[in-house]
Length: 180
Image 1 (cartoon, rainbow, N blue to C red):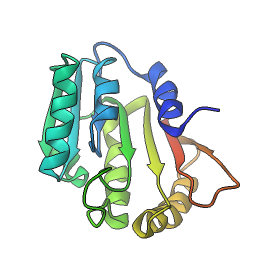
Image 2: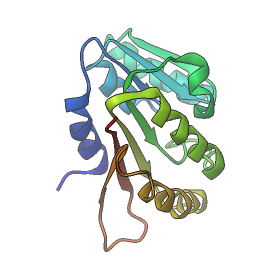
Image 3: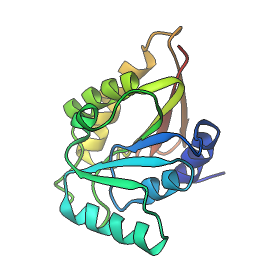
């Protein structure tokens, strides 16, 4: 079985194109942004923490990647910086590994950011959301947002999930494919 990050990256690959554009809505240490940058022309990466942006910039620099736009702002404001027709948008929720665990993504802004993401992706595009219910806000995000995602209108979206079902605190990936 694959770990959650490998699963998400493998699931995203068919949706990415060398002339395309992607968004890392929750930059963190930059693993998703670097992955995306290897497969698309342009990546927009968002984080509110300067430490996260600096770590991710260093990671991208060591790999020679220059196609990532680092934006110090909340994912709630994605539409201010990017236009429509995005190939893929990645949300890796929670807190910055090794950082301040009190600074986390928040249920209300995450849900609104996912709504924005669904508007920004092109037909045939994909949004991935990874929940980490091992901390209090991560559990709130999962218990609030996951039921909403399962109710997305069927003709417009297909929603898939990947999880370890016998571990309550295990991360869970959700993939939302925009059909129309």
